[in-house]
Image (cartoon, rainbow, N blue to C red):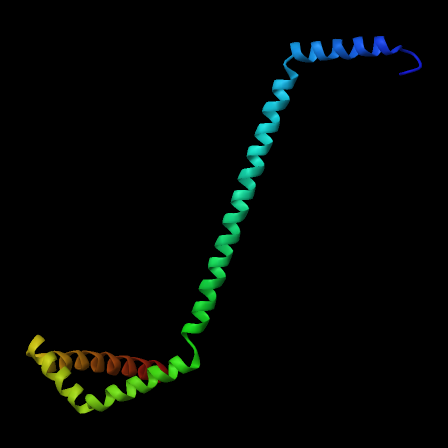
Amino acid sequence: MSDIFSEEMKKEIVKLFDKRLHELKVKEALDDYRSVCMSIDLRVKDLNERLVDVEDNTNDFENQLDGVATKHDLELIHEQLEHLENYVQHDELEDVVGKTMLKLMPNFNEKISKEIKKHLVAIAEFVIKNFKEKE
């Protein structure tokens, strides 16, 4: 370019380009594009930071879960259950449950015996039917 044009022509051509670019508002469009790109970049960085925070929280939560059900904790729970068994005997529980059931359903035993009888009759009929089919 320096061989073909003189320095003054170069300056004039640059001025013409600048004037035309100014008329077309290319600078404003490029500035808008730059600001949009910067805004997108900031949002991406913000989202990335949030994702890192979420990942850290998830890892912390998983570590806490791993620590909750350790063998020591399970042994402690088992010891507490054994300790509770000393307070309440199995026979006492059966008595309490039996009395409660009788209060809730006074004819509990009769109802149970009727249900058992129905099932026994159904089983007997099924066996007789299958026995006759095989003969």
